Length: 498
Ligand SMILES: [Zn+2]
Image 1 (cartoon, rainbow, N blue to C red):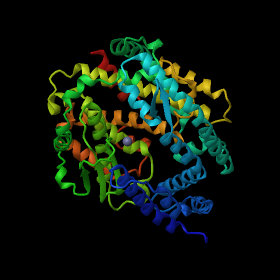
Image 2: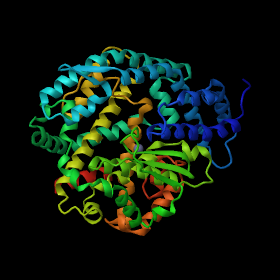
Image 3: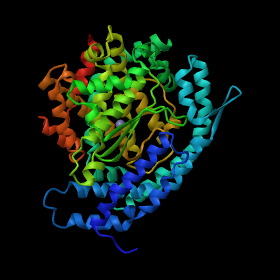
Image 4: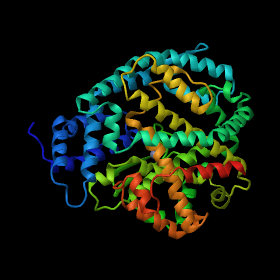
C-alpha cells in the first residue's frame, strides 16, 4: 500500500473512533448480539502500521506546526499504542475468550469465571469466599500463560520500536514521568498510612469481623457492599437527580440535544452505566438501565461527567483534541461528578439524606483504599514494565500490594491485575486533578459550588478544550503550578477526622 500522508491519517482518526464507539454502544446497549470490532480494526489497520508511525515521526522532526504541536504528539501516541495492541491482538482475543468461556468448580457448582466477582461481593461467609477464590485461581493459572506471552510480546516490540522498554514507550508517548508520580504516591502512602490502618481496620472488623492483617483481597468487595445505604439511592430518581445537579450549576439538560440518554430496558443491555462518545461533541450517548443503590448513582454520575465533558467540547477543535490526548482529563471530570453523591452537603441538599455522616465516612475509606491500591499498582507496574519478566514478579506483585493495602493478596494475580499502558497512572492523575478542580470551585464559589450557576460556566470553559491540554497543563489554567496531591488528601483527612 502506498504511503499515506499525514492529512489522510488524521482524517481517518475520527471515522475510526466513531465506528468503534457505535459498535460498543450497539453491543453494550443490548441492540446487537455480537461485537465486530475486528472488522473495524482491519478496515483502519493502516493507522497502526509502521508506515504511519514513520510518517508521523518524520513530521515531528520537521518544522513545528504554526499553532502547536500537541496534535502531532497525540497522533503518534495513538498510532504507536494501536500498533502494539494489533501485535498482541490474537493473544488479547485468546485471553478474553478464555475469561468468557471458562468456568469455576466450587462445592459442586459450576460458576462462569466472570461471575466470580459478583459471587464474592454477595457471599457473607468468609470460608465460602475462600473456596470460591481458590477455585478461581486454578483457572487464573491457566490464563496466566496467555497473559505472560502477551506482556512479553509488548515488551519485545517496545525495543524494536526504538524505546528502552515498555515503561519508556508509555512514558515517552504519553509524556508522563512515572518516576515523579511514584514519588508523589510514596508520599501519599506515608501520609495516609495511620489513617488508613485505623479506618480501614475498623471498617473490616465492623463489616466482616476480620482484622485487616487477616483479611484477604476477596473479603474487600463484601466489606464495601454497604447495602444499608442503598435505600437512599432510589432507582426512579437517579436520572432526575443528575439533571437537578446540572440545573444547580446552570445547565439545562434539555438544551443538550447532542447528549442522548438511553434508559430503555432491554434484556441484553449491560446493567452498568457507560458513555459512548460516538461523534464529539455532536453525538454523545449516555446509557443506563437503573437498578438503584449507591453504586448505581456513583457509576451514572461518573459516566455523566464524561458525557458532559465530551458534549461541551468545542466543535472546531481538531479530532486529536476531541478524541485523543490525556485521558486523566476526562477521568477527572468523571470523578468530579462521581464523588458528588458522597459529598455531605450535596447529600443533604440535593438528595435529601438527613444524616449523611456514616455514608460519607464509608465512601471516603473506599476512596482512600482505591487510591492506595492504584498507587501500589503503579509501583509494581513500573518494576514489571522496566525489565524482562521472570517468575519472581509474582512475589514482587504480592509484596507491593500488601505493603500499600495491609491485607493479603495472591501472587497469582500478577498479570491479571495489570491494565495496559499504565492506565493506573491516568486514574491517579485524575484523582489528583479532580481534587484541584474541586478546590478551585470551592475557592471561587464556596462549598456549595454545585448550586452556583457560575460553577457551570467555569466548567464549560474547561470542558470546551476537550483533551487539548494535559492534566499538568490544565491545572495551570485554574491557578496551580503543578499537579498537587494536597487538595485530594485534605478532603479525605478532614472527612475522616470529623
Ligand atoms: Zn471513566
